[in-house]
Each structure stands twice: as structure tokens, then as C-alpha cells.
Amino acid sequence: EFAVVVVDASGKVVEVNEKAATLSGYSKDELKGMEIYSFLSGSDFLDYVGDFTRAFLEGFGEAKQVPVKIRGGKIVHVDVTASVEESLDGPVLKAFLKESLPRKQ
Image (tube, rainbow, N blue to C red; front, side, top):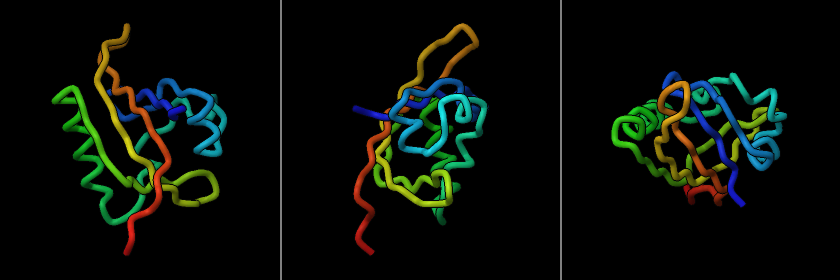
């Protein structure tokens, strides 16, 4: 099962499933309204922001080994596949996340 996070064009989380809540350490209600950028970590932060923007423009995105900061500051790595969908409030990015092993240094 994948963690599912739905984000609007401004980067605000608008919907999540229970797996996303479990992975992040936040409740579903706490996650809604949070900025997706607050979960990004590491020196590649700007690259991931660019990936997010590109996914919205192209309608699809994929990233491997993304370091994500969860509750308590712990970093987990996730693989992400995302696609743009239409909602009543405009386009949203629906991201499917699966925890992955960190890259070898």
C-alpha cells in the first residue's frame, strides 16, 4: 500500500490517506493544510521544488530516494510517483509515496 498525498498548486496538502499519516507521524487532520515543502530535506531541496513545479506543468512526475523529514525530525527516504488531476478547486498533484532504502554514500 502506498502513502497518498494530494497537494494543490501552491504546495498545500489537501488530502492524505492513513498510510501517509502513519509514515509522517502526523494525523490526517494535522497534515491537511501543511506545506509540502516543510517535509523536504537536504541539499537537494531546490531540485525537489523544481521537480514539483515540473510535475504540475507536465502532468506527471517521478523521483527516487527523496529525503523526507517526518515528525520528530527523522529523515526517511521515499520513492514518489505523481500525476496531476483536476479537482473542484483546480488542478492538484496526487503523489504516491513508498518508503525506500537510503542511497549508499
